[in-house]
Image: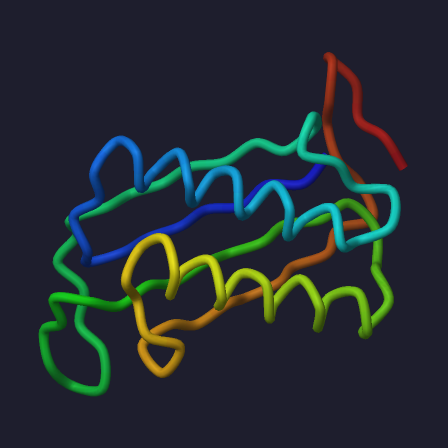
Length: 115
């Protein structure tokens, strides 16, 4: 039950969005027990984003939300993959992106809250 939200100043084509989606699906699968088939995603492109005190035409912020804690090594591998996907598929340099990971012990799905 993961969620990945991508916010970027870059304006993406439909094919770039699909490539980012596919890459994020591969990234989340680096966390044991997480699959692309259960991944919910949002991609917000062409945003007015400011970074390091100035408006940027190319930068990104990615938030990852996971049910339960994951091992640091798995999160590190996923993070590296996310940076690679942003660079290759969206044209965002690794120096111009942040990734944030949040882990939750409880998560609602299919009408119920799960522990």
